[in-house]
Amino acid sequence: MRNLDEDNITQAVLARHAAMPDERLREIMTSLVQHLHSFAREVKLTEEEWFAGIQFLTETGQICSDKRQEFILLSDTLGLSMLVTALNNRKPQGCTESTVFGPFHVEGSPEYALGDNVAEGVKGEPCFVRGTVRDINGEPVPHASMEVWQADADGFYDVQYEHLEAHQGRGTFRSGPQGEFHFRSVRAEAYPIPYDGTVGRMLKALSRHPWRPAHLHFLIKAEGYETLITHVFRDGDQYLDSDAVFGVRSSLIADWVWHEAGIAPDGSRVDVPFYTLDFDFVLNPVQAGKAA
Ligand code: BEZ
Ligand code: FE
Image (tube, rainbow, N blue to C red; front, top):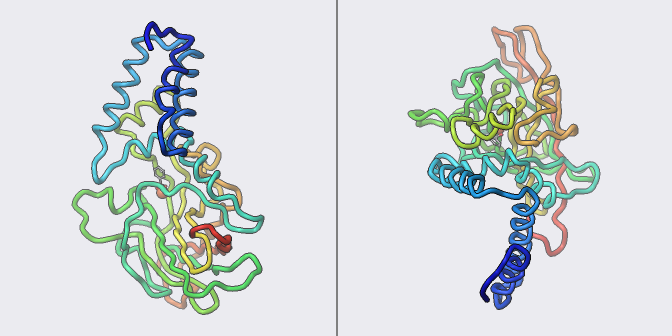
């Protein structure tokens, strides 16, 4: 095919893909090419703008390492991650909703017994978290694997500290025989997503802030139930309606209740004011033929 012009080049590209044996790949690539071309036509993309886009994506790739994934951050801040989460996690009313995974989960975080303190010296105000894991009928889900991770009082996850070897503010538990869980940590605080790279530059250019409202991450797995990836957000946080990654759902907002220094829910004595957080999770049973 020769002498292609702005009207017939899209069809020419699609025709080149016609022999692709993988049907799903063909579906995705057809739609991607159509949307990309439509986008360029719609905004009448100039050559300078095209090149600026190429440079932006090149730099985004150059920032990526085994510690940092700037492309996922780009997807998060453009709402794509949350859209994909929503599309793939439709659940019956009453189930705990999912939200974005985020880049700060660590495989194989330390195992703790119920009641343990996952803070491990991390900076922050003490917080006692408790709740239950249940199914949609209100039946307890015992022995569910529960991974929790959070930022410290300065808004950083342990993995963001270059020279920190030990895990802090993260851990794995199993719910008890009645689906109950409880542990100690520190109060979650709002924090900005990493904004010293291309994504930060983009947010600035768009007059957007990089902040996420305070939240606690959970990843919950139990036999026979869909894996739940979610957060609990702190009520009253100023960024609940402007989360940089569009992850907030009203059903995931909870109260961190302030208490005077004294006896904590686990019976221990705390010499400084502390918080309690109560939150129950409801898991969705795996549908026949669908993976957890
Ligand atoms: C997080 O909550 O850890 C997170 C999610 C998306 C982008 C950056 C951080
Ligand atoms: Fe987070």
